[in-house]
Image 1 (cartoon, rainbow, N blue to C red):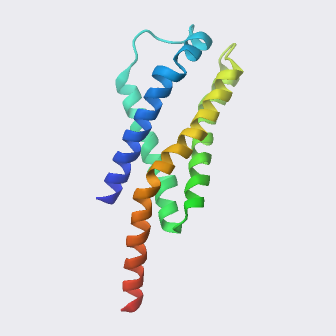
Image 2 (cartoon, helix red, strand yellow):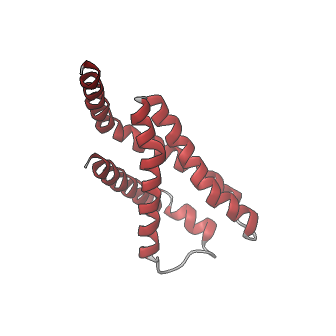
Image 3 (spheres, rainbow, N blue to C red):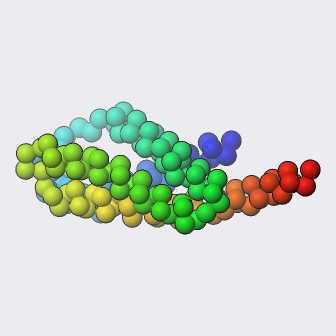
Amino acid sequence: MLYIKLFLTSFATFLILDAIWLGFVAKDFYAKQLSFYLTDNVVWSSALIFYIIFNIGLLVLVILPSIEKNSYTVLIIYAVLYGLVTFATYDLTNLATIKEWPLIVSLVDMAWECSLHFRLLQLHFMQINTYFNIYKIYISHIDAI
């Protein structure tokens, strides 16, 4: 049940922050830089699949290892690294393969993802910290037996 709560919290937070970024903060930037590449009709099913896969990866590769290591530092380092690796894959591949792909888009995307993950995991910290405390109690109980 905890994994589902962590996933749903991550998914909802990521979706809200990304919607603010894409829909308001950086909307004009992307329209200007990528107007030739953007579609008039977003394929929402593809976007939803991306958000689900991305947040499963975030849970498995960032959140759960930080809980296991009982470390806020691990949480932040893994979160920023996950954001950088996942979006560098996308942006640097585009830079390498799409004619006239704007370098500034790749740099802004990667910076946004690193900061997004940092903010996202800060929001998770309270929930995860609760789990850390439950985990410590569980481990101390096991040790006592």
